[in-house]
Length: 364
Ligand SMILES: *[C@@H]1O[C@H](CO)[C@@H](O)[C@H](O)[C@H]1NC(C)=O
Ligand SMILES: *[C@@H]1O[C@H](CO)[C@@H](O)[C@H](O)[C@H]1NC(C)=O
Ligand SMILES: *[C@@H]1O[C@H](CO)[C@@H](O)[C@H](O)[C@H]1NC(C)=O
Image 1: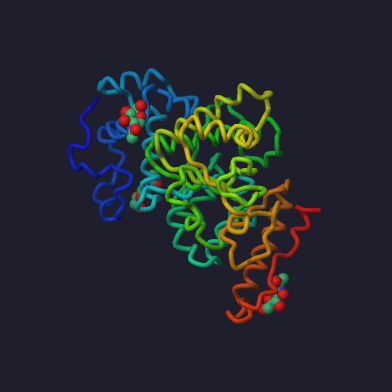
Image 2: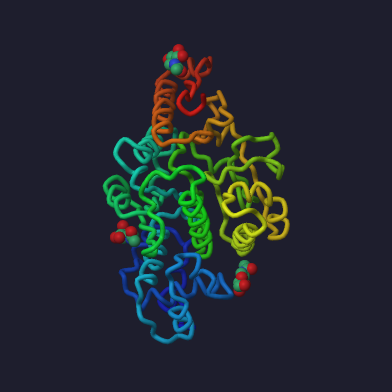
């Protein structure tokens, strides 16, 4: 393996976060310097070339093989993509190596669509605007990347092999393309962990009004929101929703992800990843030694189980809702209600009487 960290031992550690340090250690597309670094992350996190399949099915195994021998490898597009991902994660992450991550396609990124509502919620929320500098937006098609760059600082294009499905249009729930997109997202999340970063994944149709990290226990390896919360944060009989998911980078959580996808084989083809998680989470967490926490819908909730208490809400998901236009319509209503609530004087807020307008297009 090539020599590691020859210049500065803390330079490439994702958790060495001060921005002056980041600047001093800034990677400038110097592949000679970058490759050993990436190779270190991957080598440390992996026993085999597993990550290659996870980052991008188009990745060539042979490239990695020569790479790990310390031979000077050809710099492929895939390596550049991984180098760029590592850099973008370092740019966006918090001091402890956590990044808030969401993903968009062209339809979600269009002006007036979900991306605008999502970003607006951070600006309207209480103490959420500073979190925007830790939000990484993963674009799944080039048009979404262009639009992301116009409105946000940390954008990354998830490249796809030529023959993969087109991700740019609205995906209908449970269609084949939808399932491919969701399992692709699952693989990508594992790659983030293998690069040593914790992530808080949030769907783009989730409004952020307060910082939800305060509700994630320091002992949790995985914390996940629920469509329906049963009142017990440790009960493995909760109904999780992978649209809002915190995962700590550790070998055991990577193992959890592998087992999660392995479990697909036990279900009929076409079963979605969320259903498989719900059915296997007790077994997977026990086998991988992972502690799961299920988040209260009063804090991290959504349309499925809508909490009336605006004093407690952190995030609000347009779940139990299909159709992009329906989501946009009802989430715009959510932002209106939030503005009305935050505009009221504290005494009026304490007296209560505020609440969400019924999400009438989503919930009929
Ligand atoms: C990381 O941040 C630096 C400094 O802001 C910027 O120049 C660079 O382009 C960023 N890298 C990526 C991959 O976005
Ligand atoms: C994680 O797994 C790798 C490869 O199996 C191993 O080398 C490393 O020591 C493990 N790290 C921890 C913290 O257990
Ligand atoms: C808007 O705020 C006022 C008080 O400022 C309150 O009386 C009213 O119920 C609020 N409307 C909604 C939809 O919450």
